[in-house]
Image: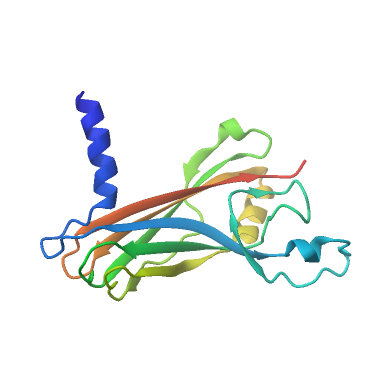
Length: 188
């Protein structure tokens, strides 16, 4: 029973805004986005002369199983979407991202362990009005450079987990924590 209450409390604490001056709710999500080819561009594509990648897509996974149809960008962005569900403006917030890479031997996913790799710098965002939804680009992850460095050592980044802590600037109180996971699979 204690464990169940703790889990319920942990889930609720991720959604509620904890501030003495605020009586509202802040929600959000994290996504990985990149530019890739639109489906119409992929039809009959000449890989020796590919067109520009102009369509923004949300990455569910990074996988090199199909050179055209499955996105596997050299770089991608971490994007935060926040919504103020309260009837009050939420003052300026600080966004603190943390990237956790699960890295292991290239042929042995089970060998992967958490370690540091490319990071993103903290950002701030001016207040969110009541009912407002904002999209904040936290930064670009230069994946290819990181992956190439690991690959030369027989290693592979099997997963990226991004965590973002959102704090009220004036009080330093934590308002929300979010995380997103990106599975990463090499080609055959």
